[in-house]
Length: 309
Length: 309
Image (cartoon, rainbow over all chains, first blue to last red; front, side):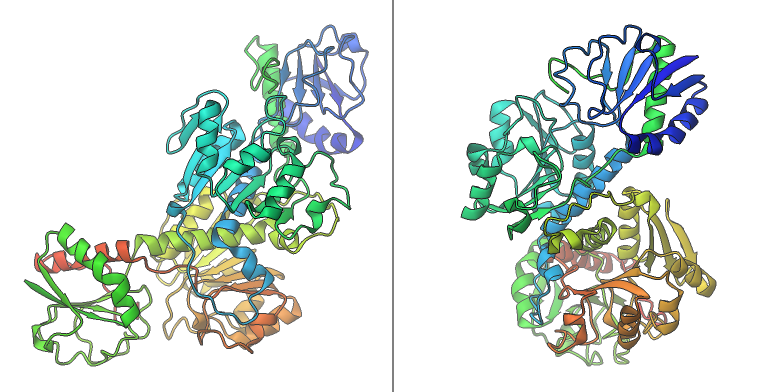
């Protein structure tokens, strides 16, 4: 019997209890899944960073903490967490992100907003350029960034990806390091932010990097709110340096009702819906990691605590 | 020396003269390309259906008429045209169509319009369903319909295609015939019209077929305006049977300023920009067909005059 503690808010328990039990059975595991256990009886913790559990010290027998989400910035600084920590890499999360990013890239590429707002009888029939004539840059080539890059390349966009460490992906111009960043930004018609939030990436989009983009560039941020210096972005939008920003994530969520992003004519707010972990596929990822732990195999998707993701 | 007559309006000549000459040279052809010839000297006609040339009788030596566009409904009824007629199947045209269709499918799938119009501080953070939970039906599985179907399947949408004659495409549920049409319509969350306009397809979307769609279905028409009975569509939009229509093509273009489509809250008008033939790639298709004709090889993309496309 493997004891698995579910440490997340009530709404998550309702969402995950059945999918997790199904996934454990399918993985051939015999699991006691509960929301409370004596800490020294717990083998694994299924964890949401906003749960009440913040002190991992008494969980002396715990073999791994399995995060329900992709983002781990709210937990990597917790010094009581000495157990291995795995991020969620969920097929549903990846697919949803591909759909949001591809959809909003095509929206800006095709100039759809003018048609959605309505042209009032004005027949401006000039076809947009083709994807092959458009440069897309994606900052971050993790599971989500790489998957989005590949779908955009399938649509024949010119895709440049940037990551801290050098990577190689077929059909994508992959850049890294500080010089690579300048080059990646300077060519971007549309810039997509899919970096993890770490002390190194916070405010990565600031007055200086915004000025490196071509005038009128479009920004999509389905990554993390803290990647953007909001005041610098608003200034760049007001000056016309940035043509439009479509933002899904914010430093404070829900985005406060009086935040200037809501009413700015060149900002589209989507309320953190770009993607979410889907219970059924995420439960299978968690079950697979527990199966691995029980069989002495290495865990999937381990967080590098020194890098912060 | 091969004599090629360019029979199209002035604007097309400006657009095509250089790309055609380049493509002929690249194909190893020695061509005299002109806008006027004695009719009995002409070997091939590069043709736009809105050109002044409407009587093909004197072109006794002409081996083929090579259409600049995909749509041939304005010429198939011309009884003086006895020469082989080839449609344009242009990579640029196909790519542009894939971009427009994929973009507008994702727009409706993600519910983007609410965000583009602005939610005014209302944080409704419910992620949309995944593509795998959405049914797309494409009527027409020619070069354009098949290419769009395959891209949507790559995004993991459930794609059903319908064509007059049975077809088979990997990853697509292919239906045909009258029963197939009812089935294809009855499951469509989003319906895409990419049929040619023929006497059989005119008004294919009428009161009866609109009623076969699930309530609230979305219609995309980048095909031909005549495929839709406009009065029936407006009635279905007003009753809520159809949730939204995004229309790129119309019976009369430019769409008259007082047409109810312009102001209808559930209609998006894009002014025939879904796709257009791109001169450089189209010129290569024309050169290839002339090369084939000069070498006794069968022409590509020949129109079946009895079927009308």
